[in-house]
Length: 357
Image (cartoon, rainbow, N blue to C red; front, side):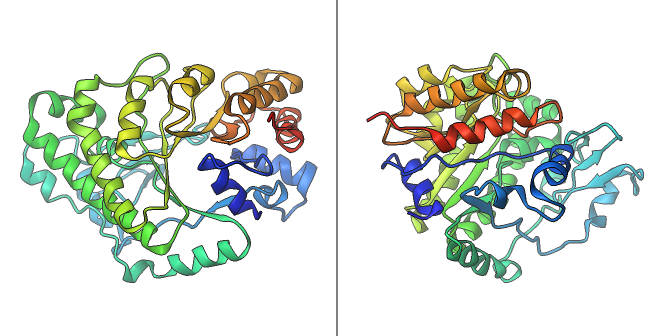
């Protein structure tokens, strides 16, 4: 099988030939990879033979972000970057991949203000390049991924502010509906573009968990977020029944898993080891959904020994069994404190794993 075929079989719980490798490196680890392992012009995804690639970010019809400046009093500081949704990101030299967010609609008081917001539009004409990129990846034997891990909840609160959106959901339903419906439409349009282009995997997600608890009540989730995610996935699978839908959420989300399955999610990421026990989750849901992740980036990857990393990899693969259903990987971006010995131990454990029949 090609790497693509092997991965898709694994995710569909149809068996697999080899254990694929996957991780993301922070900039300092990527630099050390080039200096110590791969060479100056090397790509670590190529070097470690990862089986998938993102096809790239969709292009909005209007790429001029100055239209968002009125929401910031007409200007922003030199250390603030406005993203394509109009959200400001204030960074410092030590920010790494985290920034302070500036929410353009945090002062909105009416539905009309929300509806007037210049949310991006994504057209087929602007994104015709997608199909060629998918074909190019498939010609190399690689699976293609349409990445939109901020799908509804996160995108909405980035723009509105989390506290404001939570209060809207509790006490101003017209405001909440206007905000979330605007984002649902935009995200559905984006998802359909990826699906129509032929990607193998659509990667959705919104962080709906915290370290030891869910972020909101089941009642709020079921009322505001679940039906929107289900509608989005349903429209995607109407035109691409075979597409594999990933869903990302950090933290503890066990009470939400049944809703994600009902919504049409095929693979759940990352089953954060510090928040949930993979064996328990697998025993409860493993015949209904597959998993990606499970190797802790708060614990074993930065602070464990190489042998502990290997034990984690082998143990979790044993739980999933010969049919697959686990794309084993670190649960998040690998940060500077992760030693290369542990990254190489993860790779070795995947490469040498012997399936239990």
